[in-house]
Image (cartoon, rainbow, N blue to C red):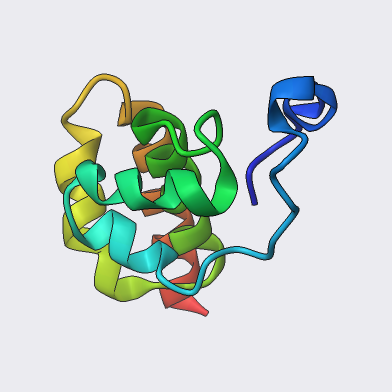
Length: 100
């Protein structure tokens, strides 16, 4: 869900953070503003809850879970430089999955 980031796992500043499964509201992060990630810092830790990072991972999650409802939001995000590459990939993946 969050990529490698082994450095985050072994960092002493993250000792109090327990591993969790993907939050049930990940798709909501893509649907809403990236600022919805702020409350997640208490759940998954400050480093994992960086808006750019979590939004990119949410885009991947949306593609991998066939969340076709997120297509419009991903299209919007594709116009923002920090999300263009991941959003383009996700839209391509969702397009392929829609054909199946």
